[in-house]
Image 1: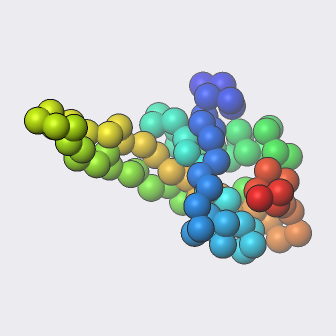
Image 2 (image 1 turned 180 degrees about the vertical axis):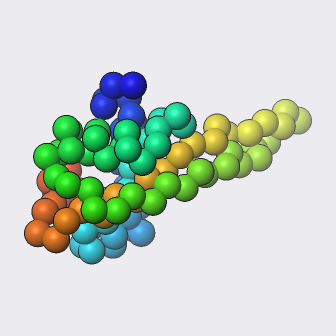
Length: 94
């Protein structure tokens, strides 16, 4: 799996912005991604060392449009803690 396919996009929310000030960064990752793949992708894409990685499987929500029922897609979220003194510039500009 390519590094660009492993990290799908950053998650920007109030909580993730608060985490960024603590050195924790939140990303949406591929469903097949695991901790070693995420660690390698973070190193290659952002040139920082991941000290700790937590993964959360986010279940899809039930949605309704008129009489049709359906679900949003499930996805995987990774919270990456980087070494002290290192930052990911993508989040610092927000």
